[in-house]
Image (cartoon, rainbow, N blue to C red):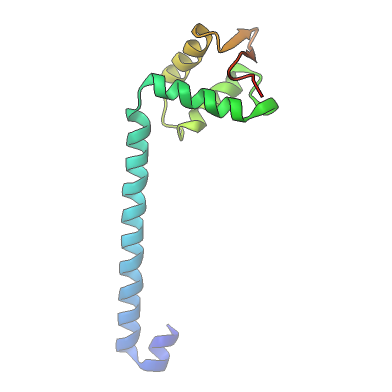
Length: 117
């Protein structure tokens, strides 16, 4: 706006067009980049998801979720909330089946390698 006042309306229009083009380009790249990331998160195998969950939980130390609901939310957040409830529940069951976690009365306890410092 100040450029338009100082240098005339033509300079102001050119500046506005440049800024608008830059914003559109930035928005498009951000959208496609986020889309690619979400597709990659959905395209990984359950084995890779379990590995990512184990690493994330182990890194949390004593701040690991203590209840199943909190663990489910943590897993979903790890994958940018792209998983449906059934998939999150399946991942929790797989953690139990592999004896990485134990669930008793909605309380979660962890086993190695998650529980190791």
